[in-house]
Image (tube, rainbow, N blue to C red; front, top):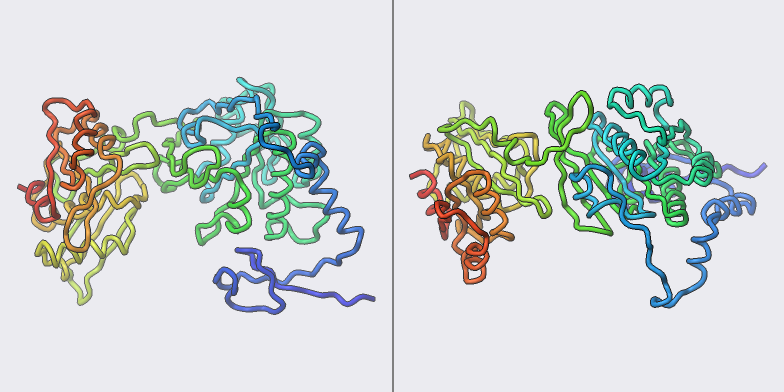
Length: 472
């Protein structure tokens, strides 16, 4: 009887080790090595795997026979619109035939709801859609479809976790779109590991990519997010997919952000804004106006910043609260702003501006449940802190844009004209920008922006000067 051999596979990156370790030497993750039985490399198992990967004749011929670039005919199929302009924006104009899109997000954020709505829209306008659910029965999916008012006659449901059954259904139906919910539930017949393991996830994703490229059927793959905030082994999935989308937002807020972090066929870091209702996801055409609707005029510690999310400028309210600390160590709490970035701004305010915030508790919050990472919000966050500390409000018709350096200077930001134009469109009258952003080129862009005559662009070279203007 042959001896059973085992190995330890990292569930985060897929690295293999001969013995157990607390920390994976490849990716540095802790407690991710799991013992698995090493499959015998028999000729039968090897042939099964090769047959599974190379069972699609058109793709096999294209990869085995080198072709000269001018002889390759481009795809004649146009992009497929999903029926939601916000999602088309993130995808770069629609679905590319044969593309594989990975959609990730926290549990309950609305991934299945959004893709079921997309399925219903494409089934009505383009062609048949196959929705594969490995977590729900077809009756449960139908209940959700009825709640979303989806009654597509060309929407086919399949409750299966076997990859072979899914492949057979795709070849039989020839759908315009395939949705897999979720990749952690699929199993490949030639592997003995459990569903959701790194080997099953990686193997099933590779076979789905082969299926998409050979049949030119776009595929949406839903991937669960782990407690660390990653999509079930990002090293094994994100580099395989053509596009990676994240559905973000607080579970207790109604707004959701569909953010593109990778796209081989369009711009990255584009954002689509949706609002969760009882009837499903509803697009937010003008998110800046919605986010500012409940703003209170005359409140201290409030500032309006302009953050570029891809090619879209978003105006968001940033709030800060500065109170004397009742304990020995002052606290610094953030929500939607990077903690280290806030600590840096507090140090600059203390050293360069003279605000004694070292013995104060500082709380910073981004309204709407967003997470802002762009440096251009530095000026707005610092102004909100100074406003709360000095008990002076920032004018309600003023917007602040600028990156703060360690020397207290204001640095130029990209796409200044788009930010200022969006501010004027929403009814703001003044905007503080860095002096470095109004050079000859920046001045020409602002002049060509078509700003109203009563809109004023105020410049400041340092954080101290900008705060004097804002809190005057």
